[in-house]
Amino acid sequence: MADQLLESSWCEISLPKIAQNLTNALARLPQGTRFCAVVKANAYGHGIENVVPLLIEQGVSYIGISSNSEARAARDAGFAGSILRLRTATPQEVKHAVQDRVEELVGTVDGVRSLIETLGQGALPRLHISLNAGGMSRDGLELSTAGGREACKKILDLAGERVIGLCTHFPSNEPKELADSIARFQDDLSWIFANSCLRREDVLVHGGSTLTLASGQDPQTDMMRCGAILYGIAGSRPDFQSTLTLKSRVISVGVYPKGSTIGYDRTSCLRHDRVLASIALGYANGYCRQLSGRCAVLIRGRCLPVLGKISMNTIVADVTDLPGVVIGDEVVAFGRQGGQAISTQAIEQLTGRIIADLFTDWGQRNPRVICQR
Image (cartoon, rainbow, N blue to C red):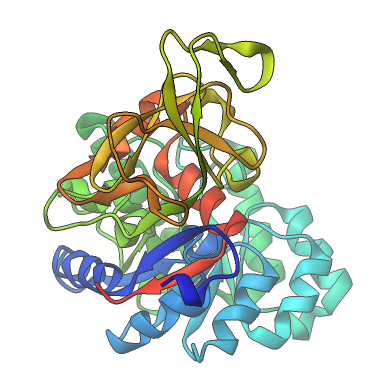
């Protein structure tokens, strides 16, 4: 491992765990429902080039992205299936994504008109109408108003046969609220099919999320879009395992006398002589400052306190009670080492951030190393 790295902090990505999470997610789909694997944010920090081959192996034919660079990365990784952008895009973004055959969301008349002005009527990509259905209220068309229903008709008049999908995103997965959202979405679909030339058999209906899949409720869609479950961010244990570990190395070990202060602002003062290890990790690596004075790391299978404020590139751990720590020892800041673990629950509580946020941050700030276990 050491010879593979030019840096002393990295994220270890477990391909077997991603593959197994995918297998288990596919097994939980309602009968006849397709799976759209969400790989936005560079596959939640895991690297699209690492995840796409696993999707291809298991026959996933739809993926969800956010940016043009993600679409290009997926094509470069050999993905030949359908790519859906999971947000509305500017006309210029859409124009430059045509080469990668990206399907786009639309939710307003002005949005469709701007696409026609930029691309031309005959060059529109395949489109999915995003329905709010009393949900997220960000880029979906709200059919509960007369204006929304008129806008829907106008979008269909303008976009014509380019509309191939209808979708929503459920804002809550609390059982009662989710059931109400599913019913509302189905009512909106029924209105569209009754008041347009769209035929149900010609349209891909999709929605949901990882938490919707985990809820066990059937959203009655043709396809469910899920991301977090692939990376073990959500899903029941032991079926779904965390797929990313944040690691670093000891870069210095020294003895410091009683009264020494540690780090910026002298927030930690030694009451006794202690042995301290410096570790090549800091907020530049996504190891956020909220962890200052509250966190621990794993070295040689032992949980050791981190002292002082988190610096940009360095943290300090007290290794007094672990004789023999040397420069180059592996440090786990998130994940397992030996029989100990820095868990998702612990890191979320300490940082005030969800693990999807942290994975995305860590995976894009640090080198990624592939792990086959």
